[in-house]
Amino acid sequence: MPASTPAHAGTYGADESGLICGYVLGPGRGARALVSAAAAEWLAVRRQAAPAGNDGGFLWLHFNLAHTGSQPWLERFAGLPGDFFDALKEDLHSTRIERTDHHSLIAVVNDVHFAFSFEPSEISTLWIHVDRDLVVTARRQALRSIDQLRTAAKRGDTFGSPIELLEHLLRAQADVLVRIVRDVTSRVDGIEDELLANRLDHRRVRLGAMRRLLVRLQRLLAPEPAALFRLLQHPPGWIDEAGVLALRQSTEEFSVVLRDMSALQERIKLLQEEIAARVNEDNNRSLFVLTVVTVLALPINLIAGLMGMNVGGVPLAEAPHGFWIVVGIVLDFTGLAGWLAWRSRRRD
Picture 1 (spheres, rainbow, N blue to C red):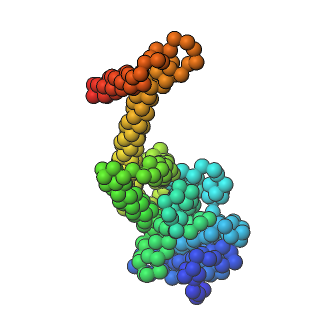
Picture 2: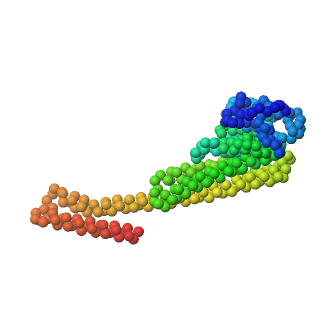
């Protein structure tokens, strides 16, 4: 194998082939960084010899698909199955792990952007190919879980097999989801406290945005159970029992996080219903006040309209105390209308 050179792992950029970082990993060894030229030579040795020809280790390559040179490089040097490139072109981005006809794994994993700020649009896809001695990950935007995996490799964490690397990635994604659920829970707690203090403000809009975010996360991040079941029942021959058990445990962690998401969605829904009920009550109260004012103004408007007609025979027109008599009649009818309205309100 040629001597390795420093990888471009310190930045989010990529080299001329679109490679962000490349590492040779293996049992009991730290990560050894490779650039694209060294990775191409490693892959050439892989094609010409058994996996042991690469010292029993495996290669992890991480690509930026936004770079125009990444896909041609993969097609030329990586020897990936066509299923991987078909997955890159699909519009279906639901999280899944599938076995290909070439006894490798194709995983489609959704994750949040590195600079995630609770916007549903800040969720992107990571495509993964896993074989007995090669792992290829590719994305278009910088994602949190894959960045955590890069950090772990840079600080010297060991990964004994490609399945262990995949499991570490899935656990990192589950950790990202746990943090999102905690942050959303903290925000919901604050809104609930303000609701109890009768400070509604614009909280319904915020609750709606968080609920839409959780629904989108759950829809995209929940692994497809059918594909996962088929994989765990009939894994490729190069995956041992420990690897299958690790995959099963990581998916169970996903299940726990997704249940927490469902419970948080239900809580947000109840808060939205409570806020809507309070707004409804305030609207009903305002409508009642408007109705009472209209009813109280009805006698004076009616009598004023009758007395103001320029026709003969208007009552009390010549009486010296006619004005005060009319005022008294208006006050009596207004008081009666007010009493009826108050009585109706108390009965309700």
